[in-house]
Length: 514
Image (cartoon, rainbow, N blue to C red; front, side, top):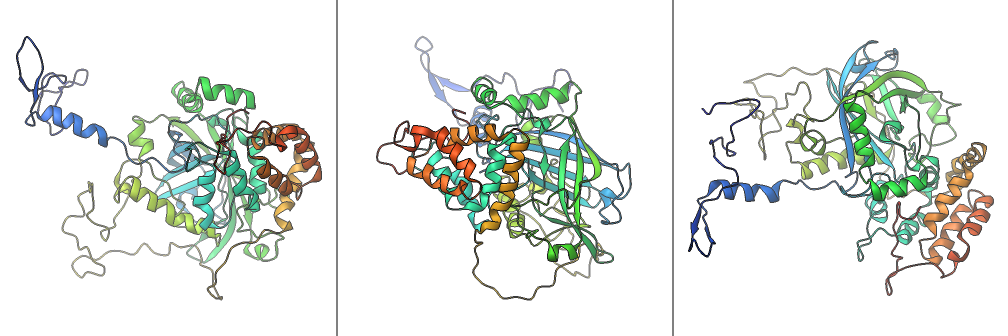
């Protein structure tokens, strides 16, 4: 065995063989005066080095590719055992290890992180009864409520299939024809569109969840909010554009540096609670992720504090390979009848199995405290002993297993028929946007909203702009009047830069120019 020294470790090849100079190659040399030679396949160091390099990357996330991440802990500060028996909330003062990943959505890994975009807010709680993943966003609502539209939504926010450039016409064409996203668009183009730092973003569960007690069948509907203790501070558009060019990793660096110097970011977990009976008669569909629950109807209740206090030892190992899914739940927490949530519960682990591998749950960044699941065996990169000789089929008489007891929050009882369905947009979809517009004016944020909105819309083709204005007329005529004034000549052909012969305008969908 080669001697080891922590300060100066002995260099080896991947199989552990001590090696000499890592820059040397074994070659058949030609004329020494002329140089050159032949590389040999028997040179294990050369072949190993070159073969590993093109395999260093795993597939990039289709969305949420650019992110900062950190380790931390969650501490319960308020008792909610009256509504859930989830172990991580079992007593005030209980602490749980957490892994966090906060990301932009549309951009690739190399994109700027100060663009106007939703931020993903993902947390993995390593509880005593398995992992719980909180997989939300920094805005309280989403663009769609029909999961079949999810790929189309994201494609419209990303690159044009011909030019491979983000495209405002494509962006607005999608939203003009899928108007349930108007509420989310107002949030995106309002003050919250660009955070000052990732330490200052809200984290919303967006969906409705169930908190309950499997042992007695009771539950409540809840909405989850992580509120930054440092305040929800946003960045001016001009600063965001400047930093996108000067410091495209600004938010990632800010998070890392704050934690490194001990300025730990913290959030307070708050919940809104609704009794199932209230849900039956509430004015809005509580499973619709394009709508909020007003705080005056369902006040925020504090639960605990999240602190991020440790940077990853290695980004790829801890953050890039991390996998989060809303299907990762613990006893006492369950899904609601939100079909967007139901679909995400399939899609996210499916993506992880493709991107990282079928045994991604074994990696340290994803591994639960205790796992015994012998009916999931084999596959690439099995690294946990593969359960040895334990039976790989259910109900074996050779090794008995104990039941985990009641774990599911009460299921709904369904009476209905299977049918094709797509949600319809009605005037009700514009009620909360109207309320938000009134708040923008009350908060003196209306001018910022109009400026951000027009700055983005003017990059779309004129006919697309005009269709978008028709949508905003359903919110408030004042928005239309002010938009038309701000757009000016852009509502004609003047000022639009697009690729000749293509149906879309070649314009950045996020960030560029505003």
